[in-house]
Length: 327
Picture 1 (cartoon, rainbow, N blue to C red):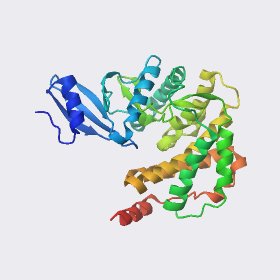
Picture 2: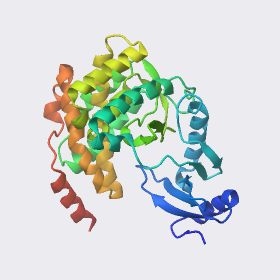
Picture 3: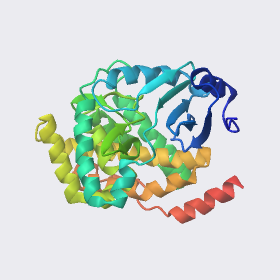
Picture 4: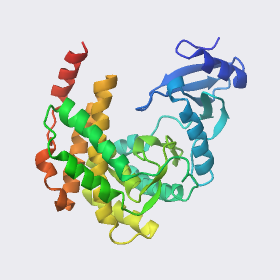
């Protein structure tokens, strides 16, 4: 009999409808959302991946399917085999990610990070522009305000006076960059490697935004630049500029985008442990602060952030403090 111990009844019914009874499931690690993922093993030894959308996020499934129709002709994404009102059954692209590969073999990782830039350029050609509203200055500012609340005030326990003006300037400046189609979460853990081919996942939030937004995510999120190194980072920024035919101002835009994204994800990585108890996100805060410092070296107009934003963070102390609060 199939293992349904952790599977919602609706999801089990969906699988039975499309696969019969000869399957088993195992839960997979999810992302920052409440979507749930399962590896489905079939009697012939093959596997598929089930994405399950609980009721509170069910409208996201329609958005995902629209995004799939838009991007699948242009770039490599897992094939959607079946879908219903609350689930989709997809090609299984395994667990090996570009992020993992870089940590195992830097030289091979750098080669495939360059290939990921090629894939990004192809992604930008797809037709997903109307699925989600474009980034706006108010949107960027709201993301920074989340950082003020969850990182500065709640996690670091610091005052936030003076940040509002700088955050508004960052948001306004970013909204004036040239816009392209953005994946919005384009980093190495959302790029799976199968037989030397790259598959993009988690692209349902795609929208029009700054031309370096996904590049900054790819080269800096989750501390990958500690392995890539700043010299390689700058080489890959120039490679992207050449591939897209962008102007010489792209380098400055890259660091401006990096600044906003790095500050924003401080809020994301603080909210996850504070609200959902996901303490492993704390480990990503120090490299995010490193990215803030790197961007500020290129952007003297925002130098005051060094004084206003808490720029040091002790992961172990924060972990112990949060454990005490939740116990």
